[in-house]
Length: 176
Image (cartoon, rainbow, N blue to C red):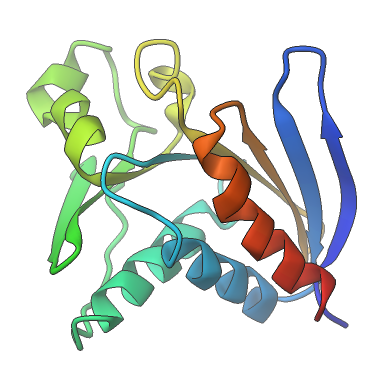
């Protein structure tokens, strides 16, 4: 059974929102790989969810996909302890940040994340710690697990740059 669109709506704040039911780890991986092909330098993706919801898995699949374009296979560690991991690709730099252990908003400057958001693709886990200060045009992805393999994934955005990019992804889900 392929992923299914559960809801698509615009909320009162003008945020577009699509909820997908992903019935397997493979469906989650496939969605991340499709999104990877749509990302451009300067894009920020905020990843929300409880511990174990699949945020790191989703980010790893995006990074792996982008590196594969250059023929690179690399172990993608979780940045839980380093806070940030960076990857160079022929298409530009990718920053993967896990802000779970961030203790102060001041650490954002030390990490260089604010500058990276303007130039690189930034995948940020636990963005609740900074979202008010960075990423006003970010794509927000909320992951909610049902069991170890299935989850709801909610895509939310306000900036119109995501409209066309995500419509291709949504169409591919609808036709599976």
